[in-house]
Amino acid sequence: MKLSRRSLLKSSGVLSAGLALGELGFDVKKVSAAAKKESRIKNAKEFTSICTFCSCGCGMLCHVKDGKLINLEGDPDHIINEGALCSKGSAMAAIPNSDQRIKTPLYRAPGSDKWQPISWDEAIAKVAGKFKETREKHWIATEKDGEQEFTVNRTDAISFMGGAQNNNEECYLMAKMTRLLGTDFVEHQARL
Image (cartoon, rainbow, N blue to C red):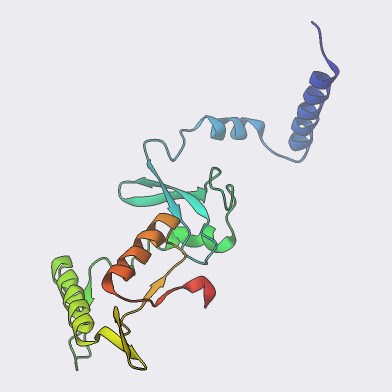
């Protein structure tokens, strides 16, 4: 058998680590049995996501099985965090699995002190109606500068706030939508 110097160093390092672990009381049989167990993420669907805690936008790999998030780790292919997650990002698994998480829209009527569940269709219709009402009520078609009048077509009553969970593509689409609605007030949480 021909053994190179590199192979000898690798083999002696592995052998030394194994002997050290055995001397420290680690049961090699238990470790071997644990390594042979099926992976808990087997048959789980993998999704990529972005951390929602700060404005860094770190990438995450999420494994979901039976509608429950079972594993969360940093995305090694993500350009920002390259697989690392801070303590806040690692703890994010508690959010989707929380029993306190609200899963349907809630509405509180004016003057009421109680929230009542409504359907998604109702919620979208209410938000769209308020947008339309506000835009029409506060629409500015023209502005005067001295004696000259300019077409401006905008509203100053609507603004948008981006968040850390929005990726570049979503931010691009949000900026396009805000311009379509006629507002110039677009901000991001990282700047505040």
